[in-house]
Image (cartoon, rainbow, N blue to C red; front, side):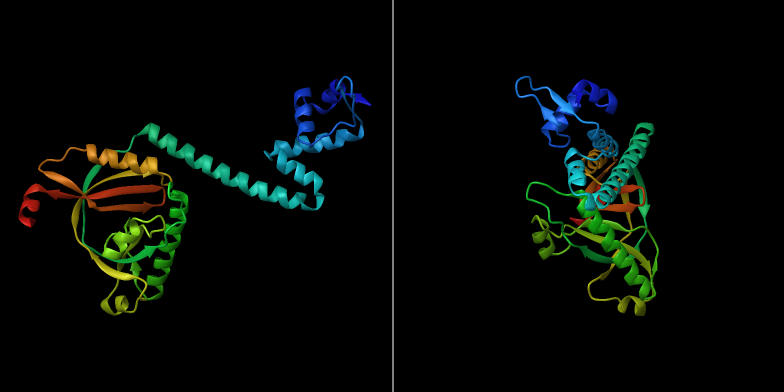
Length: 280
């Protein structure tokens, strides 16, 4: 039998770690003295300790390691599942590092630019199944990307050409959309895909999409790298609001978010005060 001290040295596991593994049922001593509480181990347990160390080194939780050891037939599948999760985490960390580097190097600045008139194909994005007190931006982005792909495939199959970067806009173009937009299930967004096509091609598009004319306008926009989040969205709005404009104001009812490959550009229409007076 090996004392906990000797077993600790042989396995390169601290006594504290061995006590923790014992409490978690991961590595139970061969014997525990009832009077002193001293733990003793056998040489046979060194192999299990080594395997635990290897699996824990992959980042697997104690619970997952215990399951892999208790159910050897599922160990490879559990390791594969854990590997995929670790890859997703590393990809997210790499993306966060790129975003941080870009933000620290050059903080995004708002810019004024002209957007020409264009023909767009619009489609509602299915609303996320978020709870009443949260909005899942990752889930929304996944649904958004899927809808953009669907629209692009649809227009191309009908012979139209995608002529610009897609964007999303709040689903508030009709009374029904405005009502449903206020619910947790939505839908909350519309995707818009700029296209070039003749009238016959546009007429051949299916009924679940709508052909619209996006009117030319001057915009104030700001690009924020990386995935969407409420914090990034709020930061973009804050920068847009703070940007000085001469004899003009921004119209948030005509907000859109251009979906670039490396981030999101939030844009709002600029209205000149003299134009607003004429319209009124």
